[in-house]
Image (cartoon, rainbow, N blue to C red; front, side, top):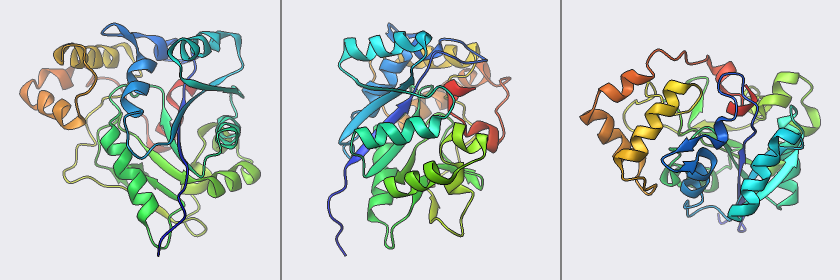
Length: 259
């Protein structure tokens, strides 16, 4: 059965506030702000019609909005803590039928992984409400390739009904914690690399991703499999941030900059 063409919009949540590493979304990574590294990589995904940075109306996030303006990135400014509302209104403004949720601390995000998740979502029959490559039941992709794909209808249901502050702040728990109501699918890779930490939540994490970009000559067109090869060749890389505590699923599911 063929579906009408659906408009796929990636929304990257990014703000300057972060309890562990303030201002990290604009931290320098091999000559470019982290947010630029992430957006440039993510926007190469073939399945995306548009990419929007969703930041807040707070004065501290003027810097994020100004960066977007200078780079020609679409930017939506919304609620500081009700991130579900921020997502919903950004999705509505940009006429999204399908939302790809990305968080602004994943500069190694991979367009191929985004495409894999979006295609799994679009091609499912009967359709899924949410496809994600990390859920409570596990993950096989490295931490930092986190991609969640949901329908506008499911997002709208969450926006209308979610009352728990946790569900408002972390966007999609309303959907993935109600499996009886929503069809949710975990996207798994072949091997399990879920122990690898490629996100940026602490100074040690920043050092890891800086070394990755420097290794590739400050380019940003390498794939996650290229990074995997690098980690295999140089096991010391994974030791740099091995002491950083990774939060449990419910904690970790929040937006990085919302911590």
